[in-house]
Amino acid sequence: MKTRIVTALIVILICIPPVVWGGIPLEILAILILSGGCYEWLHVQKEFPAWPVYIFPSCLLLTFISRFIPDSYLFSFLIVCIVYFWCLNIFVETFTISNAFSMISFFVIFFLIYRSIGRIQENHLYLISIVFATYGSDTGAWFFGRRFGRHKMNPRISPKKSWEGFVGGIVSGFIMGWIPTFFYLNDVHLGLMFLLCLLCPVVAEFGDLCFSSIKRQYEIKDFSNLLPGHGGVLDRVDSLLMNILLFGALSSFFII
Image (tube, rainbow, N blue to C red; front, side, top):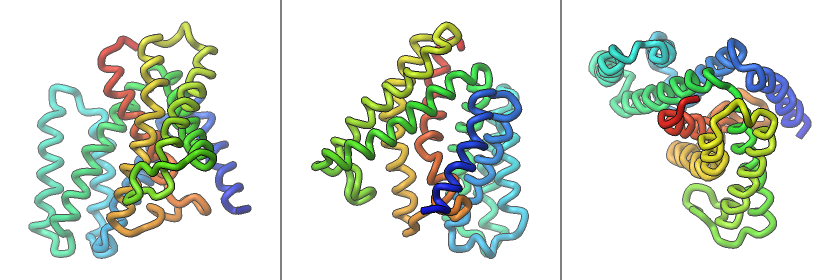
């Protein structure tokens, strides 16, 4: 328990300044999450220790570069990257086609996440509300599920999650998302912010289930031990990453 508390305090102290300030600190935090997420996503593959040394960094580097490719070249760049990952199986004996598809899935999903972070950088105040809505939802779902939970959402993936907790998480997430918003209401698009506070708690719950399904598939409790007492990076930011994708999708319809 002591290790868990100490780790939580360190993570909070590291993450608060980038979320509040945005800019370069937020970019550095995004790169750290991208790097940790890449390692955790790929290392669950049983062949991972036998991969040639260049495969992991090449996946991370291409995902990082994809954020800065101009729109006119983006389609061609994505095709080249996907073909590269797909063809590795032909030339590397210890790299299976299953590994290739896992790498492609990471690249596509985290390319979209990292690209969405670029949109958040245009007005990082949205991220503050997204964080509050996400973890307000997690906290509310845990409390209401523990107190009132009777009907299970999906025991196959997450035996402890209940529909009562799901509803409680939506309510608490919406409220928590709006609390910080009042301090900068004039600096954000009201319609976009309302949709984020309303939808982030919902997406957070399903995001957690999506990442839990990966762990179920590979029969692991946590993605890694990078955060002592808390598992891995993806174990802590799974719901948040899904909500960053939500922001990327919604922000396309608004001028932020």
